[in-house]
Image (tube, rainbow, N blue to C red; front, top):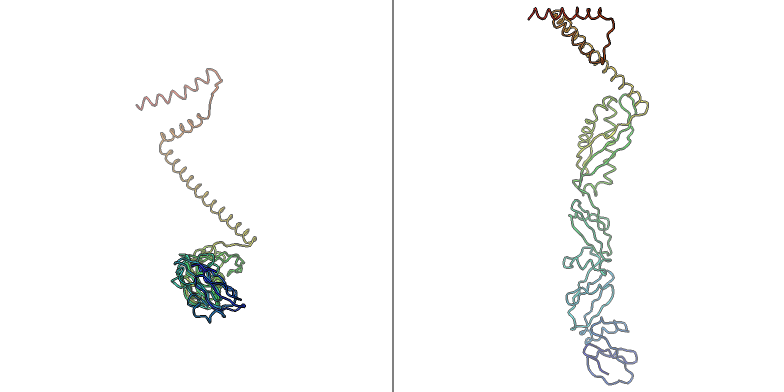
Amino acid sequence: MKIRKDQRGLLFKEGEYVKFLPPGNYFSLLGGNIEIHQVLNPFVSRIDFSFLRNDPILMKELEIIDLKDNEIAIHFEEDKFKSVLKTGIHAFWKGIKARSFIKINLDDPFVSEEIERSILMKPEVKDLVSSYAVESYEKGLLFIENAFVKLLEPGNYFYWKGTKSISVIKADLRQLQTEITGQEIMSKDKIPLRLNFVCQYKITDPIQCLVEIKDYVSQLYIHLQLVLREYIGSLTLDEILSKKEEIGSYVTEKIKTSMPSMGLEILFGGVKDVILPGEIKEILNQVLIAEKKAQANVIMRREETASTRSLLNTAKLMEENATLYKLKELEYVERISEKISQITLTGGIQLIDQLKGLLLPLKDDTQKKS
């Protein structure tokens, strides 16, 4: 029997391993058989590997990777990714291809820098890795076994799925907003109303905000609610309606001084809406209508007074100046004439004589003055 150069053999007699056979020609042996192995393939025998360990010659021919339950290995051939080896004993024939291995302890979730990120994206490796992306406007908080470990800057992070639980919480560092909607409050003059209040803020300390404080959004909401109730309860309805902008400033400053530090920066606060009960709204509408009517009456009286004063001044001037009086009279005649499209005269010669009597004296007076 011939064992080629790309083959290796194992000699067995009566089912028991005898020795390793290198390439060559072998005559049949009574009661023996040869197990042929291709050197390009991983070494896999029909008997348990522990029986083969006692042969030092065979062990020199093999490269052995023994992986525990908490270990894996990344297998490279000719510096190229080949496969992922899991728990167990893995053996490869030496001398044919350059092989290398990176053994990984899964008790340590951190991925070594020597492993390229492209390797982690291989389908065989991807399922063994947890990946997290921290955006440019975020900070990440790494937790191992539910204990905070460190702060993560923007970037992509990979961790082995091993014996320890891994989680990453992200803190959004952009401007955030919370709203108090439909908050029922009693004013100082015992008028029930509802407010919609908006507050804008930013996270400045992700560790304090997300690790040391439980549910910072709810705690901020409660503080805003309490300060808003306290301040609104000290104002009458008229003051509330006239000081809407001041309410936001007061609440913002009060929160900054009274609220314990939670790693937040309060940027802005303001009243969005003031919602009144139906009957109160109706009363206010009546008051508003009455105020507008009173203002309209005042304006009308003022205009009438100004008009009367103007007429009085005009009358005095016309009383002192006959020419001005006559011009004013002609002005009114002109205005009346503009509205007359046709004049019909009846009365014959007597009416014509009367018109001459009116116009000729005026003409004579004009010639005398000239």
